[in-house]
Image (tube, rainbow, N blue to C red; front, side):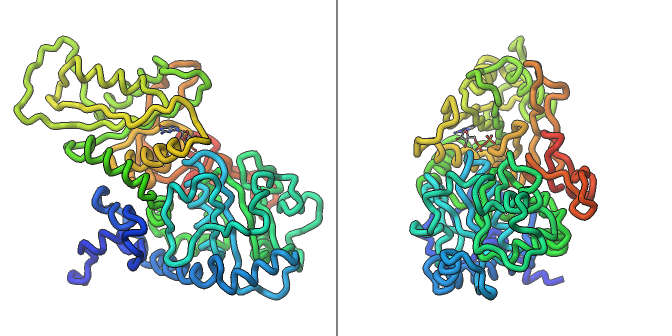
Length: 478
Ligand code: GDP
């Protein structure tokens, strides 16, 4: 009814429908206010409640962030080991851990947890977080100050650490009805976590954890789906995300702005290879095999999927159609893979033969890094640029089990076609399947009914948390 106040103007596009705060120095991070020039307007509007909670969070971060009075007070508590009274600011520290796709998803999950629990998120910069991303919050940094007490010890934090929550429960040093808690607790939420660590996902444990001024987490998972199964968060989550399958889509675009270096990689590549296309397709190929590849069964699967789903046009092997119009439609295919074999193959196919539709097909692959690397600065810059470029395409094909693909689909607001995981070196039939939602899959969810205190199928409790398409024991929000 309020036609005139409909948010359709350009400034609103620039702020992604109100998701981003205005007023950042534009020169400090080019991508923040330029991403809308490369992305189609999202089909999904963030709720006004989410927007107001984000603005509140930004205020909290300003008040409690690094080098504020409240931060120093909380730091004193941390050092003294005692929790006295209720502190004015509470924190959750995210430890940089695992591959880049995993990190992006686990950081988004931890931010949502911070929103739900009114904590301030502080990010361990690890080797390259500061090189890859801009600051998402106005005025105060999201990075943990370098003089934070345990900053040099994060790598050794594990299930044996003295402040590990699961371990303390197991050894009965702590129980869920305890009156006082240590000033910090370490939450081990890595895929190898045990039944005690998994109690994190129970209401009772959340009320205990709420008393600790500092939580320090290490995780390589997108644990959001299981937050939906915690009763005390349920109502808030449905207010934040009335459209359930949009959580990472909104939080990802809010949090992850490529640094200027990475933005250069993205925009140059986009302008050279994608901007002129009438249509673009992303194909993300991740093969979990220790041998280098390329593999014939994977190539077969990619072709079977993209041709069957009409994402790519068939070619005329007899070369009988010569109907090249003066202005053929250009389809750009962005392939990402550690290996160059698959895109070479596609490129040859579309060079050697005409398409039945008369379209011309360009195949582009930004890099082929051969294997996953951790020490090279450019390696993860390229990985991030490629995830982002995939998210700018019109349709997406992804590989099972890969967080790299989840990041692309979520940022892009795309429901991908997922290539099923091949078994015994044969292309599965059907080769791929359209995803139910663009949400990432939680690969290591708990299967525990906190109230009944027994095992349960957590993928069958509520309609919007289901098992994933690509991993039968995983959970995703739909
Ligand atoms: P996942 O292992 O597929 O879930 O994704 P992650 O991003 O967590 O870890 C895989 C890592 O391998 C990436 O971060 C990159 O370093 C590298 N990698 C995998 N696939 C690609 C790719 O297509 N392109 C580039 N540049 N790097 C890749």
